[in-house]
Structure formats: C-alpha cells, structure tokens
Amino acid sequence: MPTRSPPTRYSAVAQTFHWVIAALVVVQFVLANLEGDLPIGAHKLALLARHKSFGMTVLMLAILRLLWRLKNPPPGLPAGMSPLERRLARATHIAFYVLLFAMPLTGWMMSSAKNYSVSWFGLFTWPNLIGKSETAFKVLHATHEILSDVLLAIAILHILAALKHHFWHKDDVLRRMLPFFRPDKVKSERRS
Ligand code: HEM
Ligand code: HEM
Image 1 (tube, rainbow, N blue to C red):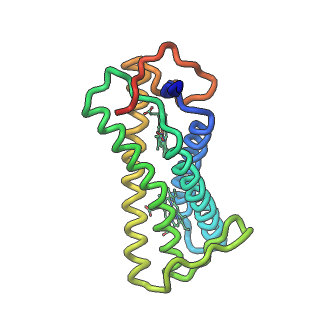
Image 2 (cartoon, rainbow, N blue to C red):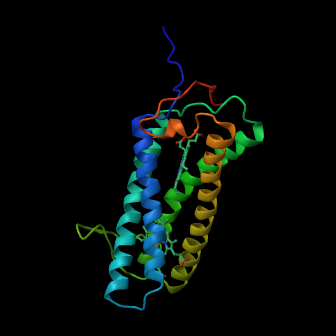
Image 3 (cartoon, helix red, strand yellow):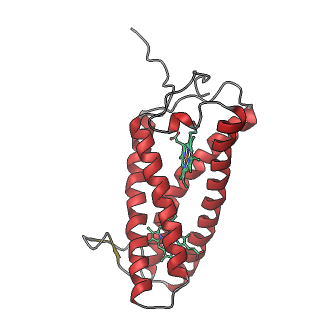
C-alpha cells in the first residue's frame, strides 16, 4: 500500500485558521485597550460586547482548528534546526493552543461570575458557566489579564522566530504559512 508522504507546506485550511484567528487576537487586544481607557457608559459597553463576541468566535474557531489539526499533521521543521529550537517551536505552538481556549473561557467565566450576559453579536446569548461570585470574578479577571500578557509575549517571540527563519536562515518556514507562495526548495523533514 503506498504511504502518504508528509506535507511540505501548510494547507489552505491550516492557513485560513491561522490567519483568521491571528487577526481576531489582534482585534481583541485593540478592543480591550480602547475599552479599558473609557469611562463607564454606552460606548465602553458596546466595545466590551464586541470583545466578548469576537472572543467567543475565537473559542469556536479554536475548537474546530484543534479537531482539524489532530487529523492533519503539519509539515516538518527544517532539518537544520537544533533540538532546543524544535522544543521551543513546539512549546510555543502548544502554549498558543492552550491560550486560545484559556482566554475566551476565563473571559466567559468572568462575565458569568458577575451575571453579565455574553451575547454573540446580538444573535443569541451564551449560558452562564458559573454562579455569581465576586471572589471568582476577581480571580478570573486577574487570570484573564495575566494570560493576555503571556499571550502577547509568546506572540512577539513567535513573530520574531518567523522573521528570523525568513530573513536570517532564508528557509521556507514563513513562506509555507503564506498563501500564494510556493516553497523554493524543500528543506523539511518529518516532525519528530
Ligand atoms: C482570544 C480571546 C481573548 C483575548 C485575546 C482577550 C484579551 C483581553 C485583554 C488584553 C484584556 C485587557 C486586560 C487588561 O486589563 O490588561 C481583556 C479584558 C477583558 N476581557 Fe478579554 N480577551 C479574550 C476573550 C474574552 C471573552 C470571550 C470574554 C467574555 C465572554 C472576555 C471578557 C473580557 C472582560 C470582561 C475584560 C475586562 C474589561 C475591563 O475590566 O475593562 N474576553 N481581554
Ligand atoms: C497572535 C497571533 C498568532 C497566533 C495565535 C499564532 C498561532 C500559531 C500556531 C498555533 C501555529 C502552529 C500551527 C500548527 O502547527 O497547528 C503557528 C504557526 C506559524 N505561525 Fe503563527 N500565530 C500568530 C501570528 C503569526 C504571525 C504574525 C506570523 C508571521 C510573522 C506567524 C507565522 C507563523 C508561521 C510561519 C508558522 C509555521 C511554523 C512552523 O512551520 O512550525 N504567526 N502560529
């Protein structure tokens, strides 16, 4: 029976998940920062409602992405990467997946703890995950904030790594995550 050779670039589905979720994460930071500077009022609540709707969209997309990813292995890393770099790359990707769940879940639970409704663009309302509790709200608020700092730090590391691959090592790591680009030459090996 013929064996399927490992892919040499991310598929269109993987790329779509990656860039749509990355864009939504940026939107989340922008909305949170805009909203954070405002006094309590209609404008602040509208931005917060958008933040919650886009955040719940990230959660739904993260579930689909993870299910899809478990069935579709990614291309291997370039052969020249050291074991430490491989471990770092893998740890970063796992941390991203964890945070793409943890950020929306802590936000959703934080709102539930205040008994504030979480609507999805006004189309429907998500049920409360936990009961009303001021202590739980404080803990979840702090957790959401700390995790957002961790997410930001990992994203910066991740972007610097992608740029380093592209401009320093001149390999295909960035190109194969970009639509419309074909790899120059395949320098990848199966992911260990
Ligand atoms: C990927 C998803 C998400 C990201 C990246 C994200 C990011 C952030 C950031 C950066 C902040 C500001 C933290 C600070 O004060 O320094 C924040 C605050 C907040 N987020 Fe999220 N969030 C996400 C999802 C959600 C969801 C799904 C909800 C609710 C259903 C939510 C509810 C809130 C609330 C209530 C605040 C506090 C606002 C305030 O105290 O003014 N977030 N979020
Ligand atoms: C906050 C936004 C971002 C998130 C949450 C994110 C998340 C991820 C995740 C989870 C993976 C692993 C994909 C998998 O194997 O399933 C990945 C791969 C990748 N990302 Fe991002 N990413 C973000 C932003 C970016 C940006 C801005 C760039 C470009 C500068 C980028 C470039 C890449 C590349 C090149 C890969 C493939 C790495 C490899 O082949 O091992 N990402 N990203």
